[in-house]
Length: 390
Image (cartoon, rainbow, N blue to C red):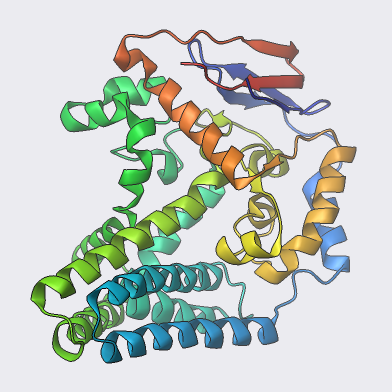
């Protein structure tokens, strides 16, 4: 049995639980009458210079990441061994993920002060090197940042193949209903499709003319496929079927890597009712989960393991997030705002147990969960969330 508490004492927030699922659902909030706490926190961050751009860091990150890509391409062209090329496909998937993190940073204006410079980096990293529309990603991701874990507002909890509430699960039909029924078991296999799906929706986005610069984005995505398929099928020693397998392995592992680094951020954390008038600080902190900081995690997660810090200050360069964490965690503690951090393994345990419980009604089971809430209409003193046992 795993337990953790969400503390928001002295906060003008009402939190309830779904009738069947022990899932925090933030429903409403009264207007703030005290000093704007977020503005106060931002001043503390600014005084430390943590919002200032980091050109040296990003020069190193871009050059080193492109260098890894060049290494993978050289290996693809020069090594005539299919089994070693499968290892290279896995390495390329990792490199694609690292490139994706740089595109994410550029989309948040973390790299340069000028918007157009960030857009160029994101166009090159996203469209050209990964094959994903940067404008589609920015639109979707900005909606997520504005409404994290908010019902009908956050696109990241409105997925066809995964359900995040009992209502969503019961509303699924046909194949998607079957997936929701056993979604904890299908979760990681489904992540292997993330990379392919990102490219599918990117192409659909461009075909519908929704991009701000459709022509330039389409050209760079087309160039991505010309280089990608050209290198694999025409310049590498791989035959046709080996090339197809190489591409499938690289794309599926890319999706698994990217999905596994994004999932711990919010999956299994409190869900907000649509239109919840919760102040920005608590909205961002209570819906996010940090993954324990260490050099390995910081690199593999591309800084996304500091999810609370990132959501509070999206434009903060990722190499400043660790220092910001000390300030933000202390501030949250002093204001009785729950700040949640756990290990990678524990985050996946929580995600899978929650997803399994969401699908319980489709399996004909009723959750046997404790409802533990202490507090009143003004604020919740403690919200204890137990792990799911079925």
